[in-house]
Image (cartoon, rainbow, N blue to C red; front, side, top):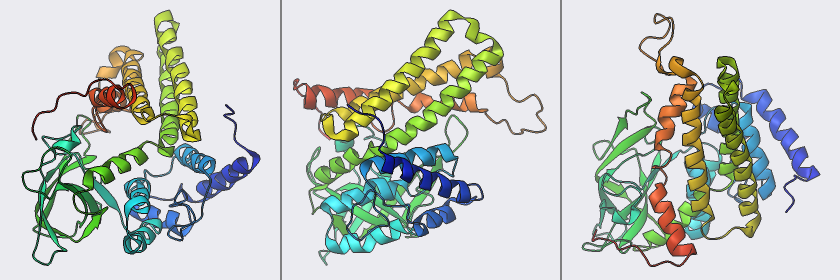
Length: 382
């Protein structure tokens, strides 16, 4: 198939690149940056002409925007979860009232979202969630009690979409409901940062103690269907933008290999070339999938490919630097307490790539059962 972009796509690329060059460099606050993006019409460009978002763009133009954003060095997005996960889910399963209420604030960069899926005993095994939601006498309000974990941006979010068990005694994917929960509920919602190997805290634990929720997406008891639909949106256009970041990391590793002399080792050279070739293949596969010629297992295949690739890159990043990769900064007065450099951060953070977002084991099970038609894996009671 043709992997080239059309002329109108390249014109769109020029517009996006020019705008980012003019606005991204001076941005320092992620929340304000979301509002800047929204005011300029860059949020929700993939939602279609429903009147809820900003400008509309073709699929290839969405790819172009994602790639140029990654190249620009702009601030990491705080609105990704609302724009690319919740919004498509509401467009597919939400009521008109819900679309009108929640989509415009996301498009304006005014309301941020987080995802309440994983739990301490139900990470990749999403059907094992135990967070419970009890409906009150008014028939509309639910009270949510339980714990979610690995919740990105929970400390910044205004809302959380939560998968909760609303039918007592139900098991696995039965009896689940997809709820929209406001985060501003003092005394009923507590957010605790999780300190990682890298020393940073990108994820959080969230504790719900009778938190109020009045918005149900897709109907009570249909949470599993809605949740699975949302996960299908998780690995779309953003995968190609992710690969731009991967390419920059690979370039840094190659430069480090040349500077340290490790590139003279034929084994190291072979590994570097293999990383480059695999990254190109992942890009072509992602474009093929977006073009509609993929299969039901394409998201799982993509996750398996990039997670393992990124881990191997992290290993190469420290290998090519030799002993220097295990030491701190030369001048401790400048970097105290200890701070990781880019290669060290890449190595440590990428250890989690094959676990978060659905572990490798889960992805292989999905491919085996849903694509290859192999016997289903036995499941224990929830």
